[in-house]
Image 1 (cartoon, helix red, strand yellow):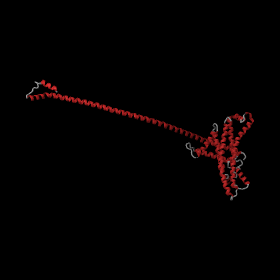
Image 2: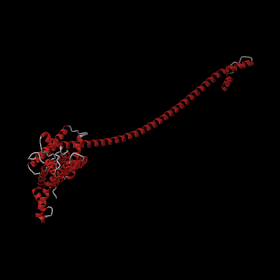
Image 3: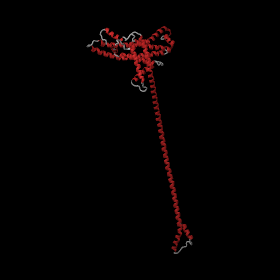
Image 4: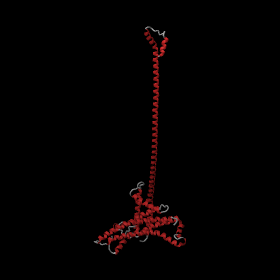
Length: 156
Length: 265
């Protein structure tokens, strides 16, 4: 149990081992652990960021959806309004067209009637004269009774 | 087992196991260097293919140890010094490995040495040799002195001897107290480890003697199971002891060096 030169040998062994452990085990391992720590921290940060971005984009998407819905509703309302307008316009047009047609027809009818009257007027004198001649048994000169006939025609 | 039942045989058996291989005590050096080379070789081989991403198997185990030591240093050591943590790691693992030699059946390696190699005496556990433990504690002590001078300065360190712990009116007492305190650090480190392991080894030898000294016969039916049970019990207990001793040596080294690094005492 005496202390001797072994002490020196053990000191040398210990210091050498210390140097080796520092070089071979501690430093590489520590670098590795630090690198992994950083990687994990980065990964977690990235995950957090991704999550945040997802939330943001979900929110944005929701906003877009709401906007699109309101836009669609607006467009629909506009289209309905425009449709109504078109229908109203068409109705109006049809009414005026109908009116126009009716007036045109009325005018034509009146014209026809007038024309028929004129024709009748032309013929009435001769018919009357022929009728009177039959009644009187002789020829009635239209010229002699022109005034009378004119008066007759004017009565039509 | 050199089993003879007289007292001289028992003493001879114990002395046989505690006698060194050669005069210069080369067996603790041999075993501690072998274990140190084992540490370096294993860590070097592992260093060849370190996995940054997901460690597996042995690397996980080593990382756990390194994390543990690193945590101890962070908790106990003030400030930062890159040598402290590797020092603590070396002490912890090396002392543990040397202590672990104690758990190898006491007669196995000496029997192999005498049977195969013709070496008559072999002391297997390096930490049962005061030279080994003192070598480590003196190295630590040298570091303590170095950092005391470096951090506090020669004047500061001297002032600690003069005015600590009782103030300026008790300078002679302070000097004696401080010198004892400083010298007690390496001595207590070395003697604690040596004493624990030496005693542990001695108990293993005594347990081994239970079966060995008894004559083969009916008595063996009682003694042999007793030896097995006792040996197993002491093995399990000693597994705790060797870990605890390695841990204590490491923590005290950190604490002493931490004290050397603090200005105020």
